Length: 268
Ligand SMILES: Nc1ncnc2c1ncn2[C@@H]1O[C@H](COP(=O)(O)OP(=O)(O)OP(=O)(O)O)[C@@H](O)[C@H]1O
Ligand SMILES: [Mg+2]
Image (cartoon, rainbow, N blue to C red):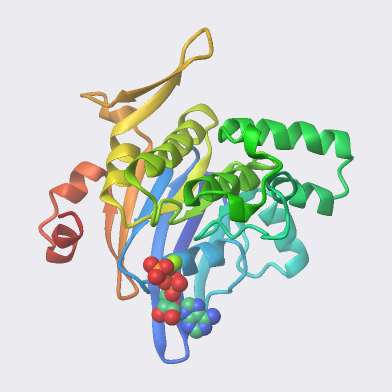
């Protein structure tokens, strides 16, 4: 029986689609409360890793642990229990176009037959968290790209999951909107102790997630602070994928000191 040391762990995970090896003995760990930023070019298997965590795909080899449990051989019914611990923010938001913002966020709770008055409390709280309470009656096509992503995050937060997977939540957004998304991620990391995998290509995201943290004062006001020399406070680590391999695993500072040409190119 594995100890509950890590929120997520991949041990020598390999996966190929036909001849194409997407993951080649990939290993990494996400500690409780840690955000793991996953980088790598298009097609390097970033979304695949998230789908493996959710059990939507099974590896050819290796083991996958979620919240200390080996889920590798779990069946669909067992995976339902695992998925209830995980919030997923899909690439592009992936909202139901025919449902209002409110109904999108309520969707999972309705499926679980939660009473409507309880659903309302949760949905309003989640929309307040992403600062979209006023938009609850809008339809997805009436929202900006950034608002859609925030609804996607609100939906992922239903059930207060302790693990959240973000698949490029800032892709295609302007810098200011992308920053609001990163601030939500900091709030979840630093105030709710959520463990996460955050897939991104954007250096700006990396700067925010690796160098800033959030604190709440006695009055409940939030302050976003720069790390300065208090590096140990920042609970973000990185992995970089290339052609099926993890070519880097470590802190932001270590990554910036790397001599690897691919990593250097990524960071410029
Ligand atoms: N179900 C599948 N069947 C066959 N090939 C697949 C399948 N899912 C993914 N792939 C392939 O696996 C590789 C990795 O895909 P993945 O979606 O994980 O990439 P990614 O790193 O998320 O890329 P992007 O940055 O473009 O989102 C790609 O070459 C993709 O075409
Ligand atoms: Mg992807």
